[in-house]
Length: 262
Ligand SMILES: [Zn+2]
Image (cartoon, rainbow, N blue to C red; front, side, top):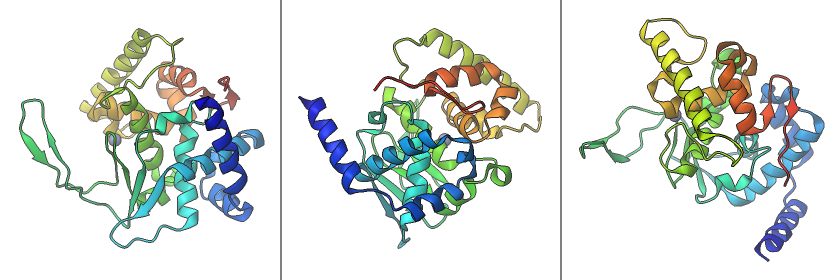
């Protein structure tokens, strides 16, 4: 019954909230890493984006005006991660807040020994457990082109959101039944230890050294690389690349699709 309502709602939204073609094209052009996606994938991505936009509200902070192009660019990158997954991975929260620049959140957090801290350093992005995703627009804009920025902020924060579906962000997202948690942990922990040692040795890594911060950041940063510069991940951490092709059901380096029955 609920499934029937969901399908009905979905077809109603798709029919009534289409994205105008020129706006869609402009957003794709601003995100060159999508150039390798097939027409069929882009059509499906567009549907996902329409549904995502009907579910989430994307609002500006500090008087920042979020344009339709910004909305579509943010949504496209969020939906790239779940293109072949269940979009309900993003259920349970509503807002994406966009700042005109880096921001300081007034969030307090308690550490393992119970001391309460308040963060003071400016951030480019943050994903809050059960709460909003917060983004600095100039960093989203810069992320479109990996060759100049070497990062993708939206993919990073939404990888955290997926990770948080199974509790705190810890680098282990909810795995599909056919994937072994042991294999996930072994592969990720091995790669993390290796990367951490390289960063601690002062090596200049092609992958953002921020990935060495924690297993959660390692998962988020490597997800950015997987989608936006897949051959880099394939070269540096082939086992993680392979693991991500199973998890995300995409093979961005070859564009082989590993479709989930829906
Ligand atoms: Zn992060």
